[in-house]
Length: 227
Image 1 (cartoon, one colour):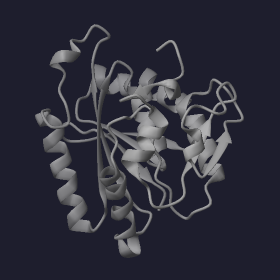
Image 2 (cartoon, helix red, strand yellow):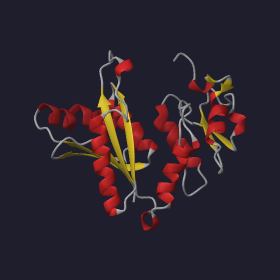
Image 3 (cartoon, helix red, strand yellow):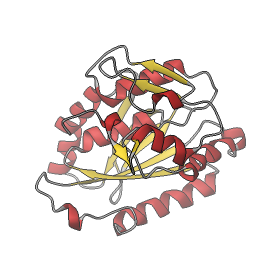
């Protein structure tokens, strides 16, 4: 973008101030910043602020820094470049955890990644609401989750670097394992087991396991948080 995202403005307000106003979170708020921009506009609205102790390591490093400073049993995490984020979306994630009874802390994150080329026509891009393959996949997992009493969080994204998108989704969801399934054998299956698998592992903490499985029919990447 040519400048830090935290310097963006929405409707004339710093994006951090905009997010705080839209989310109006009832609990404590924590902001993770970089040493290059330790006090971005709107930072004063957060209850606490911590600096990432290592620069240029991407969003996963910032997530790790935030988790190290959390003082509550549960935390809901968001990035500063999500101006459309609203309170109900975060409340939904939290409620699925709190209301899961004996299964508190267990959640199945179903991540459907639509891989596209760099020259993809984004004005024709599919979305979570229009991608029928994704909707069928989410519906199947939501039904299984309801059957077995496990909360299911659908995540949809598209881009030219699926490995990074999966790694970010797994980190944001607090996963400890990633299962990648493909119903196709041959070139695609070998690609997933080869270069893609190695790149994905390089983006993840060493303790987060990655497993490639053979599945019947098309399957998304599935990230499973620690029980």
